[in-house]
Length: 297
Image 1 (cartoon, rainbow, N blue to C red):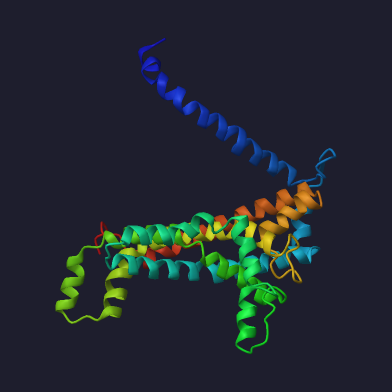
Image 2: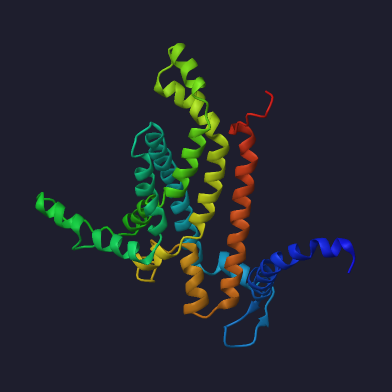
C-alpha cells in the first residue's frame, strides 16, 4: 500500500457509505427512470420500448396532464411570493429585538417542521370543511357558509394559504441575512432623513438580495414537489374538478394508481427539465437585481 493511499484510506472509508447510497438510491434509479420513460411499463409487465410516445401523449392526448401543469404553475406563482413575503415580514419583526426572540423563533419555525405533515393537512381540511370551525364562525355572524374545498379555484387557494404555513426555514435564513447588515447603514440613512420605506428599498432589499435569490430557488423547487397537502385535502382525487391536481399528485396517480410507470417516469423527467429551466432563468435574471458586497460597481 503506497503512502498516499494509506494517508487517504480513512477518508475513503468514511465517504464510502455515502457514495454507495448515492449510486444505489439516486443515480441508478434516475437512469432506470429515464429508460422507463421511453417504454410502456405497467409495473407488473416487462417494459416495451415505445420511443417518445409518452412525451407526445402528455401534450397532445392527456388534458389532465395539462390541467396538472396549469394548477402547479398557479400554485408556484401564488404560493412562493406570499410565503417569502410573510417570512421576510416575520424575520424583520424578530430582528427588531426582544428578550423573548429565541422563544419567538421556535414558535414561528415549528410550523415549518410540521406544516407539510399529514396531521396538519387533515387539520386544515377540518378547519375549512363544510362543517368546520370557519364556517361555524361565519354562521354565528349570520353569514352563509363557504364551500372552501367545493370549488376548484377556492380549493387551490386553500392549498396556497396552507403553503404559507411552512415559512419557517425561509424566515430563519432571512433573519440571518438581516443580522449581517451593518447597523451603521441604517444610522447613516436616519441622519440623512430616510424613512422606513426608503431604508427598506435602498438598504434592506439590496443587502438581502443574495439571500432572497437562495430562498426563491429553494422554495420554487419545493413548491413543484408539493404532494402531501393536495393528496390529503382532495382525498387523493385532485378534486374538485381537478382543481387541486398538482403535478406530483398526478404523477403519483399515474405511477401507483393507474400503474403507468413509464408515463409517470416521463412526467418526472419533464418536471425535472421544467424546474431546471426555471432555476436557470432565475439565475440569469439575478445579475440584474442581486447585489454582492464583493462586487465593485
